[in-house]
Structures are given as structure tokens and as C-alpha cells.
View: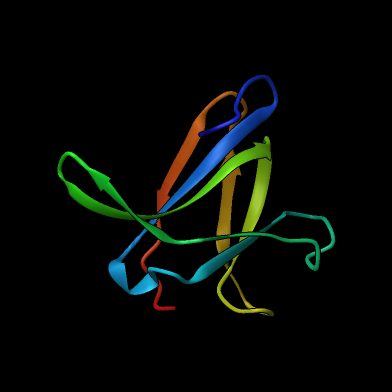
Amino acid sequence: MLDIGGNTGALVIVTGPEWHGHEIEISPKDQDPAVRTHVAVRARHVSSGVRYTAVFPALPAGPYVIWRTATEPAGTVVVAGAAVTEIEWWHQP
């Protein structure tokens, strides 16, 4: 279940099956990078088959850093308020 509206959005990161069970961490950009949110990648059964996704159900709108490792950022994403932001991310775990 997603909890979006106003200045709160959701982030869905689509990955490959090799990420199943791994955690993906994000942190608000331009804030303390040690303060992170993480979720596990799960297999989600949809009408077209299986999608492997990490779902962040409620995030304040704004830019976030996606972390490749504990110290290495992989990139950034901007979460929109009252919407679901979806990206594809295929880096190896």
C-alpha cells in the first residue's frame, strides 16, 4: 500500500532478479548521507509475469541519492509529491 498525497510521493525501483532479497538504500540529497531509508527488493507478480522492485511507499517530495554501496552513490532520483516515481536500476548487487 502506498501513502501518497500532497508533498508525499512513492518511489519504485525496478531491478533484475539478481537483486531479489537485497536491500537498496536512499537518502535525501544535500542532507546527512548517514540518514538513510532502505527496503528489500521483492518479486511482485503482475499480469505480465514477475517484476523485481524495491518500493518506498511514502517519501517527502524531493531529490534522493541511491547508494550502490555504504560509501558510493549510484545516482539520484527526484520523487514527486502525490505521485509514484518509477525508475529502472540494473546495477549488480
